[in-house]
Image (spheres, rainbow, N blue to C red):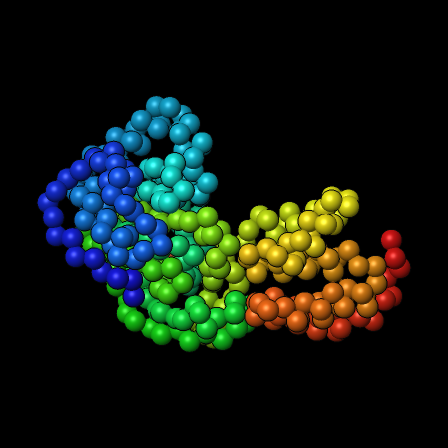
Amino acid sequence: MPRLIETETDDRIELGDLIEALETGGFDPEDEESIVAFGPALRALSNNRRFLGDLIIEELKQNCSGQRRKNQYTPQVFVLHGSSGKYLIRANFWPAETDSVVVNSGKDPFFYELPHDHNFSFLTVGHHGPGYWSDYYEYDYERTVGYSGEKVDLRFVERSRLDPGKVLLYRRHRDVHRQLPPDALSISLNILALSPASEFRHQYLFDIERSEIVKVGNPSSLESLVLLAGHCGGEEGRALVTDFADHHPSDRIRFAAVRAQAALASSADDRISVYEAAIGSDSPYVREMAAQEARRLEAVRPWLESVPAA
Ligand SMILES: [Fe+2]
């Protein structure tokens, strides 16, 4: 269950005040207590009932040029401030199940009923409407390798709602939620705690009934670029693939580079050998993924050997 932050306050601030506090108040995205310290300021911004409507009207007058420039999320998200590498402030819109956007687009675009954790910590406050529901679970990230189908000890905590004014800290790699639509359109405000490593930390999608990982939910564009570098980058590209396979700090990128090396192999035997060598990796993730690929290739070896070389 995310950590409940007590923030009873009638203070009301502007978005600029919150940004200034984050910039000058020693916000540390790696320190849970530092993040928690900004809970009251987020609540005070939420007490300001005008700022969000005013900002949306301004964006509409500018043909949404600001959002087009700085918002990499789906239209459900309105980015409020994102210039710092340490944090991002955003508003999230949560339609109800009966709202036409859910009726016509389904629940997946809003992450409803897709149990997941987060690869960053964030503060959230219920800003408008009754608030979305969640079934909350916890798990132990440090005991997790991260491959699809891996069993995980998911411990149910409770079902609760992000009520108006309620401030929670979602702790990265610990709090899992199965999010459910609110009873009426709702809005939450977030302060995301970011770091350069956030992209490479795993976010997982879970199967609650089977208590296992479905897949990594935040694939990096680097993974497909590494494959392309091997195929299209000539000698320099192949050298980069080798370097990434041996030294990249992210085990997900290291395995992507191993896949790129295997894809360059000229025979089924050589391809399997690449994966067998990677089973000796010091990374449990690379070891398991390589073992899975080696087994998969062994199973289809007769078919691979029947395909004429290009
Ligand atoms: Fe979430």
